Image 1 (tube, rainbow, N blue to C red):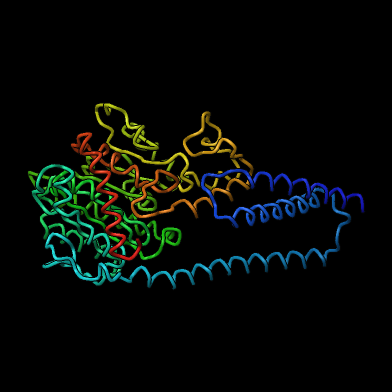
Image 2 (cartoon, one colour):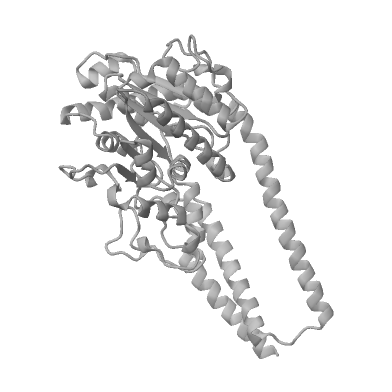
Length: 455
């Protein structure tokens, strides 16, 4: 009996050492100083304990405990599991209660309603500005100034870019929110513009202004953008809202398609989604090319779509007319004809894109290919279970945003958007204007950050 116990302990120690080695290897993102030792320690303990228990179950335990002991152990395990689930649910509930008010709070720098009639919340708007939330207020106050458009393009803007945003609190149901957004599009004359971008925000309502900035600059303001919120919480707390969010996007696209059906002149219809917003918008056009044809979509750009079976299936659904790039340098020159209608911008080393359930038990292709993709360390190993934990932790540190300092790394796509949006939406832009555009995007972000006290 003593020998069997010693064998189990030896196996556990060996497994723990192997787990510690694997967990200490480089991953997709740098972690703060104290995180890696904590993860390595946790993985070591977990691996050693699991090996010890499995070895016992396989017949290396010292003796078979009495039935009463087995029952007590099973009861303890059940209670422990229930307590763990309850703790996670309780933690999520507390996080939601604390973060929702922050999502509603409009910062002082953007607290006044917009002054342009072409922007939701402005004069004549059907949207109560006080209901658009923090992210909505930021988006609506981010219209590109005419002087910036002229500086980049060399031409005076012909229009003020239209921006429509309906917040989660603006109306009670997805249908009500979409109906209000459609009414705003009609009110502002959005269908008379040359381009109409339908954006899918993230869980908090965050609608990235950068693709709209590019559109406003390169069309001289002859464009419109619309986004409808479906929550107030960060994306990791909004996963349960994906079905409702997908329904919201579907209703919005269907409504716009119906409005445009009777018009002789219609704008180019563009789709944009980033992170969870990309997943949501892809869910709204789940049939891929068939849905894009049905809705009359001219071009779609999806950025940093979370990984998993849904993403793989959607890539397959549009494979015949899509292109995936890690960075602008991968955009083919010239772009092949007919131009790809669907563009995916996905960093090789973005843990949000690479995180998927099957990483726990199967070596993913991105760790098997040679050479590896950009920012995927050659020294990164795949180990059952352990790599899944590593990439999960990577997702927590995937975005390090410093206003004006654009980085093409992890889940930060700001450095890529100027060129990729231009290419995906086939917007006219000379090489000189492209350089000026990149500088302008950084300046705009710094100015907005200062307005809300983040710079």
